Image (tube, rainbow, N blue to C red):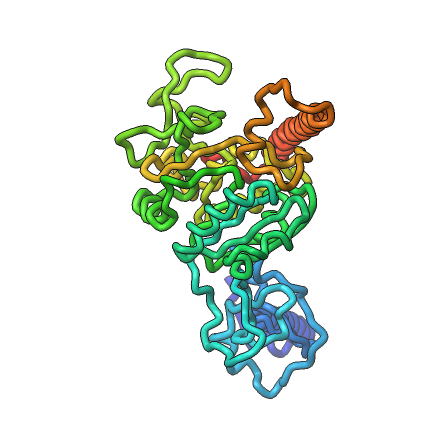
Length: 421
Protein backbone atom coordinates (compact mmCIF):
# COMPACT_ATOMS: atom_id res chain seq x y z
CA UNK A 1 0.00 0.00 0.00
CA UNK A 2 1.34 3.40 -1.04
CA UNK A 3 1.68 6.06 1.66
CA UNK A 4 0.02 9.48 1.24
CA UNK A 5 2.61 12.07 0.19
CA UNK A 6 1.54 15.61 1.20
CA UNK A 7 4.45 17.16 -0.60
CA UNK A 8 3.28 15.76 -3.91
CA UNK A 9 -0.12 17.43 -3.44
CA UNK A 10 1.41 20.84 -2.86
CA UNK A 11 3.87 20.39 -5.66
CA UNK A 12 1.18 19.41 -8.13
CA UNK A 13 0.00 22.65 -9.86
CA UNK A 14 -3.40 21.23 -10.84
CA UNK A 15 -4.24 20.13 -7.33
CA UNK A 16 -3.02 23.40 -5.82
CA UNK A 17 -5.26 25.37 -8.20
CA UNK A 18 -8.26 23.24 -7.18
CA UNK A 19 -7.66 23.85 -3.47
CA UNK A 20 -7.41 27.62 -4.01
CA UNK A 21 -10.69 27.68 -5.93
CA UNK A 22 -12.39 25.69 -3.15
CA UNK A 23 -11.07 28.04 -0.47
CA UNK A 24 -12.23 31.15 -2.35
CA UNK A 25 -15.70 29.66 -2.89
CA UNK A 26 -16.10 28.80 0.79
CA UNK A 27 -14.95 32.28 1.78
CA UNK A 28 -17.57 33.92 -0.46
CA UNK A 29 -20.36 31.73 0.95
CA UNK A 30 -19.39 32.51 4.53
CA UNK A 31 -19.11 36.21 3.77
CA UNK A 32 -22.57 36.29 2.21
CA UNK A 33 -24.02 34.42 5.20
CA UNK A 34 -22.61 36.77 7.84
CA UNK A 35 -23.47 39.88 5.82
CA UNK A 36 -27.10 38.75 5.46
CA UNK A 37 -27.33 37.98 9.17
CA UNK A 38 -26.08 41.43 10.03
CA UNK A 39 -28.64 43.05 7.74
CA UNK A 40 -31.47 41.02 9.25
CA UNK A 41 -30.30 41.97 12.70
CA UNK A 42 -30.50 45.64 11.83
CA UNK A 43 -33.99 45.28 10.44
CA UNK A 44 -35.21 43.84 13.73
CA UNK A 45 -34.52 47.25 15.27
CA UNK A 46 -36.49 48.99 12.56
CA UNK A 47 -33.51 50.80 10.95
CA UNK A 48 -33.03 50.61 7.20
CA UNK A 49 -29.74 51.01 5.34
CA UNK A 50 -31.38 53.34 2.86
CA UNK A 51 -31.21 56.09 5.50
CA UNK A 52 -34.99 56.25 5.96
CA UNK A 53 -37.00 55.98 9.15
CA UNK A 54 -38.28 52.42 9.65
CA UNK A 55 -40.45 50.64 12.18
CA UNK A 56 -40.22 47.43 14.09
CA UNK A 57 -42.02 44.78 12.09
CA UNK A 58 -41.48 42.06 14.69
CA UNK A 59 -44.38 43.05 16.96
CA UNK A 60 -46.73 40.36 18.13
CA UNK A 61 -49.98 39.92 16.23
CA UNK A 62 -52.04 41.48 19.02
CA UNK A 63 -50.26 44.81 18.52
CA UNK A 64 -50.36 44.82 14.73
CA UNK A 65 -53.44 47.01 14.50
CA UNK A 66 -51.93 49.81 16.58
CA UNK A 67 -48.33 49.52 15.39
CA UNK A 68 -48.60 48.64 11.73
CA UNK A 69 -47.26 51.51 9.62
CA UNK A 70 -45.73 51.86 6.14
CA UNK A 71 -42.32 50.10 6.03
CA UNK A 72 -40.48 53.24 4.97
CA UNK A 73 -41.06 56.93 5.47
CA UNK A 74 -39.39 59.70 3.49
CA UNK A 75 -37.76 61.36 6.49
CA UNK A 76 -33.99 61.54 6.85
CA UNK A 77 -32.50 60.37 10.14
CA UNK A 78 -29.21 61.19 11.82
CA UNK A 79 -26.88 58.36 10.83
CA UNK A 80 -24.30 59.39 13.42
CA UNK A 81 -26.41 57.95 16.23
CA UNK A 82 -25.85 54.49 14.76
CA UNK A 83 -28.38 52.54 16.79
CA UNK A 84 -27.15 53.82 20.16
CA UNK A 85 -30.76 53.68 21.42
CA UNK A 86 -31.75 50.66 19.36
CA UNK A 87 -32.20 48.34 22.31
CA UNK A 88 -34.54 50.63 24.29
CA UNK A 89 -36.49 51.66 21.18
CA UNK A 90 -37.01 48.13 19.98
CA UNK A 91 -40.65 47.20 20.45
CA UNK A 92 -41.93 50.78 20.67
CA UNK A 93 -44.51 51.92 18.20
CA UNK A 94 -46.66 54.90 17.29
CA UNK A 95 -50.32 54.99 16.25
CA UNK A 96 -50.81 55.06 12.50
CA UNK A 97 -50.37 58.62 11.33
CA UNK A 98 -48.33 59.62 14.38
CA UNK A 99 -45.05 57.93 13.48
CA UNK A 100 -43.26 61.27 13.06
CA UNK A 101 -44.28 62.63 16.47
CA UNK A 102 -42.44 62.31 19.79
CA UNK A 103 -44.22 59.84 22.03
CA UNK A 104 -45.02 62.29 24.83
CA UNK A 105 -47.06 64.62 22.60
CA UNK A 106 -49.33 61.88 21.24
CA UNK A 107 -52.85 62.02 22.74
CA UNK A 108 -54.55 58.75 21.83
CA UNK A 109 -57.89 59.18 23.62
CA UNK A 110 -60.32 61.99 24.36
CA UNK A 111 -63.29 62.68 26.62
CA UNK A 112 -66.50 64.70 26.67
CA UNK A 113 -65.41 67.37 29.14
CA UNK A 114 -66.26 70.92 28.06
CA UNK A 115 -63.37 73.36 28.42
CA UNK A 116 -63.51 77.10 29.27
CA UNK A 117 -62.69 79.66 26.58
CA UNK A 118 -60.48 81.62 28.97
CA UNK A 119 -58.54 81.28 32.20
CA UNK A 120 -55.54 79.16 33.20
CA UNK A 121 -54.79 75.83 31.55
CA UNK A 122 -55.14 72.85 33.87
CA UNK A 123 -52.24 70.47 34.30
CA UNK A 124 -54.67 67.57 34.31
CA UNK A 125 -56.84 67.22 31.20
CA UNK A 126 -58.37 63.90 32.21
CA UNK A 127 -62.11 63.59 32.81
CA UNK A 128 -63.37 64.50 36.27
CA UNK A 129 -66.22 62.02 35.83
CA UNK A 130 -66.16 58.24 35.72
CA UNK A 131 -69.39 57.36 33.88
CA UNK A 132 -71.48 58.60 30.97
CA UNK A 133 -75.22 58.74 30.35
CA UNK A 134 -76.32 59.07 26.73
CA UNK A 135 -80.06 59.41 26.02
CA UNK A 136 -82.05 59.77 22.81
CA UNK A 137 -84.61 62.52 23.50
CA UNK A 138 -87.49 64.40 21.93
CA UNK A 139 -89.10 67.59 23.23
CA UNK A 140 -92.37 65.71 23.92
CA UNK A 141 -90.66 63.85 26.77
CA UNK A 142 -89.07 66.94 28.30
CA UNK A 143 -90.54 66.33 31.76
CA UNK A 144 -89.29 62.74 31.92
CA UNK A 145 -85.87 63.63 30.55
CA UNK A 146 -85.52 66.45 33.08
CA UNK A 147 -86.02 63.97 35.93
CA UNK A 148 -83.51 61.53 34.43
CA UNK A 149 -80.80 64.12 33.78
CA UNK A 150 -81.11 65.73 37.21
CA UNK A 151 -80.55 62.36 38.92
CA UNK A 152 -77.48 61.49 36.88
CA UNK A 153 -75.88 64.91 37.09
CA UNK A 154 -76.32 64.87 40.88
CA UNK A 155 -74.28 61.65 40.99
CA UNK A 156 -71.42 63.05 38.92
CA UNK A 157 -72.18 61.68 35.45
CA UNK A 158 -71.35 63.25 32.13
CA UNK A 159 -74.62 63.54 30.17
CA UNK A 160 -75.10 63.60 26.41
CA UNK A 161 -78.50 64.13 24.76
CA UNK A 162 -79.27 62.85 21.27
CA UNK A 163 -82.05 65.07 19.86
CA UNK A 164 -83.82 62.91 17.29
CA UNK A 165 -86.48 65.57 16.55
CA UNK A 166 -83.99 68.33 15.77
CA UNK A 167 -85.29 70.58 18.59
CA UNK A 168 -82.51 71.87 20.87
CA UNK A 169 -83.20 75.51 21.78
CA UNK A 170 -86.33 74.68 23.76
CA UNK A 171 -84.24 72.78 26.31
CA UNK A 172 -82.21 75.84 27.25
CA UNK A 173 -84.68 77.00 29.92
CA UNK A 174 -83.61 74.08 32.11
CA UNK A 175 -80.86 74.91 34.60
CA UNK A 176 -78.67 71.99 33.55
CA UNK A 177 -78.93 72.55 29.79
CA UNK A 178 -75.51 74.24 29.52
CA UNK A 179 -73.90 71.40 31.49
CA UNK A 180 -74.77 68.63 29.04
CA UNK A 181 -73.74 67.91 25.47
CA UNK A 182 -76.43 68.30 22.82
CA UNK A 183 -76.28 66.47 19.49
CA UNK A 184 -79.03 66.84 16.92
CA UNK A 185 -80.02 64.78 13.87
CA UNK A 186 -83.63 64.34 12.84
CA UNK A 187 -85.21 60.87 12.90
CA UNK A 188 -82.07 59.03 13.98
CA UNK A 189 -81.93 56.41 16.71
CA UNK A 190 -79.61 56.30 19.72
CA UNK A 191 -77.62 53.55 17.99
CA UNK A 192 -77.01 55.83 15.00
CA UNK A 193 -75.71 58.50 17.38
CA UNK A 194 -73.69 56.03 19.44
CA UNK A 195 -71.89 54.57 16.43
CA UNK A 196 -70.83 58.03 15.29
CA UNK A 197 -70.19 59.91 18.53
CA UNK A 198 -69.34 57.31 21.18
CA UNK A 199 -66.26 55.74 19.65
CA UNK A 200 -64.40 53.75 22.34
CA UNK A 201 -61.39 56.09 22.16
CA UNK A 202 -63.65 59.10 22.76
CA UNK A 203 -65.27 57.57 25.84
CA UNK A 204 -62.18 55.68 27.03
CA UNK A 205 -61.98 57.65 30.28
CA UNK A 206 -65.43 56.53 31.43
CA UNK A 207 -65.77 53.25 33.30
CA UNK A 208 -69.44 52.74 32.39
CA UNK A 209 -71.67 53.81 29.49
CA UNK A 210 -75.44 54.10 30.08
CA UNK A 211 -77.16 54.13 26.66
CA UNK A 212 -80.82 54.72 27.49
CA UNK A 213 -84.21 55.53 26.02
CA UNK A 214 -86.14 58.53 27.28
CA UNK A 215 -89.43 56.90 28.37
CA UNK A 216 -88.16 55.64 31.71
CA UNK A 217 -89.32 56.37 35.25
CA UNK A 218 -86.50 56.56 37.81
CA UNK A 219 -88.32 57.00 41.11
CA UNK A 220 -86.64 53.89 42.56
CA UNK A 221 -83.34 54.19 40.74
CA UNK A 222 -80.10 55.68 42.11
CA UNK A 223 -77.19 55.87 39.65
CA UNK A 224 -74.37 55.82 42.20
CA UNK A 225 -75.83 52.86 44.09
CA UNK A 226 -76.40 51.03 40.82
CA UNK A 227 -72.71 51.45 39.94
CA UNK A 228 -71.63 50.00 43.27
CA UNK A 229 -73.87 46.96 42.73
CA UNK A 230 -72.63 46.07 39.25
CA UNK A 231 -69.02 46.52 40.35
CA UNK A 232 -69.49 44.20 43.31
CA UNK A 233 -71.38 41.66 41.19
CA UNK A 234 -68.83 41.79 38.36
CA UNK A 235 -71.41 42.68 35.70
CA UNK A 236 -69.91 43.92 32.42
CA UNK A 237 -73.31 44.26 30.72
CA UNK A 238 -76.44 44.97 32.73
CA UNK A 239 -79.75 46.78 33.03
CA UNK A 240 -82.03 47.82 35.91
CA UNK A 241 -85.04 45.54 36.37
CA UNK A 242 -88.53 46.70 35.38
CA UNK A 243 -91.37 47.21 37.84
CA UNK A 244 -93.84 44.92 36.14
CA UNK A 245 -97.07 46.52 37.40
CA UNK A 246 -96.20 49.89 35.85
CA UNK A 247 -94.05 48.92 32.87
CA UNK A 248 -94.45 47.80 29.32
CA UNK A 249 -92.65 44.45 29.50
CA UNK A 250 -91.39 42.66 26.40
CA UNK A 251 -89.19 39.98 27.98
CA UNK A 252 -89.75 38.23 31.30
CA UNK A 253 -86.08 38.19 32.22
CA UNK A 254 -86.27 41.98 32.74
CA UNK A 255 -89.01 41.80 35.42
CA UNK A 256 -87.88 42.76 38.91
CA UNK A 257 -87.64 40.01 41.50
CA UNK A 258 -88.46 40.95 45.05
CA UNK A 259 -85.97 40.02 47.76
CA UNK A 260 -83.27 39.77 45.11
CA UNK A 261 -80.27 41.97 44.40
CA UNK A 262 -79.37 40.72 40.92
CA UNK A 263 -80.59 37.93 38.67
CA UNK A 264 -78.85 36.50 35.61
CA UNK A 265 -81.40 34.04 34.21
CA UNK A 266 -85.08 33.26 34.22
CA UNK A 267 -87.03 30.04 34.10
CA UNK A 268 -89.73 28.88 31.72
CA UNK A 269 -90.57 25.21 32.12
CA UNK A 270 -93.18 24.98 29.39
CA UNK A 271 -91.70 24.75 25.92
CA UNK A 272 -93.21 27.42 23.73
CA UNK A 273 -92.14 29.40 20.72
CA UNK A 274 -88.97 30.53 22.45
CA UNK A 275 -88.16 27.18 23.99
CA UNK A 276 -87.62 26.03 27.55
CA UNK A 277 -85.47 27.93 30.07
CA UNK A 278 -84.02 26.10 33.08
CA UNK A 279 -80.82 25.81 35.13
CA UNK A 280 -79.08 24.11 32.18
CA UNK A 281 -79.79 26.95 29.74
CA UNK A 282 -76.66 28.77 28.58
CA UNK A 283 -77.92 31.06 25.83
CA UNK A 284 -80.21 34.11 25.41
CA UNK A 285 -82.96 34.89 26.14
CA UNK A 286 -82.80 32.54 29.14
CA UNK A 287 -79.46 33.85 30.37
CA UNK A 288 -76.77 36.33 29.31
CA UNK A 289 -79.26 38.83 27.98
CA UNK A 290 -80.53 42.38 28.58
CA UNK A 291 -83.04 44.50 26.71
CA UNK A 292 -81.93 47.42 24.59
CA UNK A 293 -84.01 50.19 26.17
CA UNK A 294 -81.67 50.71 29.16
CA UNK A 295 -78.38 48.81 28.75
CA UNK A 296 -75.27 49.61 30.79
CA UNK A 297 -71.82 48.66 29.48
CA UNK A 298 -68.43 48.57 31.13
CA UNK A 299 -65.60 50.23 29.23
CA UNK A 300 -64.19 46.95 27.79
CA UNK A 301 -67.67 45.65 26.94
CA UNK A 302 -68.58 48.89 25.15
CA UNK A 303 -65.45 48.73 22.97
CA UNK A 304 -66.58 45.29 21.79
CA UNK A 305 -70.24 46.30 21.36
CA UNK A 306 -69.30 49.40 19.38
CA UNK A 307 -67.48 47.21 16.86
CA UNK A 308 -70.55 45.00 16.55
CA UNK A 309 -72.98 47.88 15.88
CA UNK A 310 -73.55 48.02 12.14
CA UNK A 311 -73.19 51.47 10.62
CA UNK A 312 -76.38 51.23 8.56
CA UNK A 313 -78.58 49.13 10.88
CA UNK A 314 -79.72 51.97 13.12
CA UNK A 315 -82.38 50.11 15.16
CA UNK A 316 -79.86 47.49 16.36
CA UNK A 317 -82.45 44.73 16.39
CA UNK A 318 -80.76 41.36 16.82
CA UNK A 319 -77.80 42.88 18.63
CA UNK A 320 -79.24 41.94 22.04
CA UNK A 321 -78.81 38.20 21.49
CA UNK A 322 -75.13 38.64 20.65
CA UNK A 323 -74.19 40.96 23.53
CA UNK A 324 -72.86 38.00 25.50
CA UNK A 325 -69.90 37.82 23.13
CA UNK A 326 -68.80 41.17 24.58
CA UNK A 327 -69.23 40.18 28.25
CA UNK A 328 -65.47 39.77 28.80
CA UNK A 329 -65.95 36.21 29.94
CA UNK A 330 -68.79 33.88 30.85
CA UNK A 331 -72.03 35.54 29.77
CA UNK A 332 -73.98 33.54 32.35
CA UNK A 333 -72.00 35.40 35.02
CA UNK A 334 -71.01 38.74 33.47
CA UNK A 335 -74.47 39.75 32.17
CA UNK A 336 -77.36 40.43 34.54
CA UNK A 337 -80.43 42.40 35.62
CA UNK A 338 -80.25 44.50 38.80
CA UNK A 339 -83.33 44.10 41.01
CA UNK A 340 -82.30 46.36 43.89
CA UNK A 341 -82.32 49.46 41.69
CA UNK A 342 -85.22 49.29 39.27
CA UNK A 343 -87.06 51.49 36.76
CA UNK A 344 -90.38 51.84 34.97
CA UNK A 345 -90.57 51.42 31.21
CA UNK A 346 -93.48 53.55 30.02
CA UNK A 347 -93.35 52.36 26.41
CA UNK A 348 -94.28 55.75 24.92
CA UNK A 349 -94.30 56.24 21.14
CA UNK A 350 -91.28 58.32 20.13
CA UNK A 351 -89.53 57.80 16.79
CA UNK A 352 -92.06 57.57 14.00
CA UNK A 353 -94.74 59.49 15.93
CA UNK A 354 -95.45 63.00 14.67
CA UNK A 355 -97.41 64.32 17.61
CA UNK A 356 -97.62 67.96 18.59
CA UNK A 357 -94.41 68.94 20.38
CA UNK A 358 -96.40 70.52 23.24
CA UNK A 359 -98.12 67.27 24.17
CA UNK A 360 -97.07 65.86 27.52
CA UNK A 361 -96.08 62.28 28.24
CA UNK A 362 -99.43 61.59 29.94
CA UNK A 363 -101.32 62.93 26.95
CA UNK A 364 -99.33 60.70 24.63
CA UNK A 365 -100.09 57.67 26.80
CA UNK A 366 -103.81 58.52 26.72
CA UNK A 367 -103.83 58.59 22.91
CA UNK A 368 -104.02 54.83 22.87
CA UNK A 369 -107.48 54.98 24.51
CA UNK A 370 -110.58 55.58 22.32
CA UNK A 371 -112.55 58.77 22.91
CA UNK A 372 -115.86 59.93 21.37
CA UNK A 373 -114.75 63.53 21.65
CA UNK A 374 -111.78 63.14 19.35
CA UNK A 375 -111.91 65.46 16.41
CA UNK A 376 -111.56 64.21 12.86
CA UNK A 377 -108.12 65.77 12.57
CA UNK A 378 -106.81 64.14 15.76
CA UNK A 379 -108.15 60.78 14.61
CA UNK A 380 -106.34 61.29 11.31
CA UNK A 381 -103.19 62.23 13.19
CA UNK A 382 -103.36 59.06 15.29
CA UNK A 383 -103.82 57.00 12.14
CA UNK A 384 -100.80 58.66 10.56
CA UNK A 385 -98.71 58.01 13.66
CA UNK A 386 -99.83 54.40 13.73
CA UNK A 387 -98.81 53.97 10.09
CA UNK A 388 -95.45 55.60 10.72
CA UNK A 389 -94.71 53.43 13.72
CA UNK A 390 -95.70 50.35 11.74
CA UNK A 391 -93.27 51.34 8.99
CA UNK A 392 -90.54 51.83 11.58
CA UNK A 393 -91.28 48.38 12.99
CA UNK A 394 -91.07 46.82 9.53
CA UNK A 395 -87.67 48.44 9.00
CA UNK A 396 -86.53 47.23 12.43
CA UNK A 397 -87.50 43.65 11.61
CA UNK A 398 -85.77 43.83 8.24
CA UNK A 399 -82.62 45.07 9.98
CA UNK A 400 -82.77 42.17 12.42
CA UNK A 401 -82.87 39.66 9.58
CA UNK A 402 -80.01 41.45 7.83
CA UNK A 403 -77.91 41.44 11.01
CA UNK A 404 -78.49 37.71 11.45
CA UNK A 405 -77.40 37.07 7.88
CA UNK A 406 -74.25 39.16 8.34
CA UNK A 407 -73.40 37.30 11.54
CA UNK A 408 -73.80 33.92 9.85
CA UNK A 409 -71.70 35.07 6.88
CA UNK A 410 -68.97 36.42 9.17
CA UNK A 411 -68.82 33.17 11.14
CA UNK A 412 -68.62 31.12 7.96
CA UNK A 413 -65.88 33.21 6.35
CA UNK A 414 -63.64 33.69 9.40
CA UNK A 415 -61.66 30.47 9.61
CA UNK A 416 -59.72 31.71 12.65
CA UNK A 417 -62.75 32.56 14.81
CA UNK A 418 -63.73 30.11 17.52
CA UNK A 419 -67.16 30.40 19.16
CA UNK A 420 -66.53 30.70 22.93
CA UNK A 421 -70.02 29.42 23.64
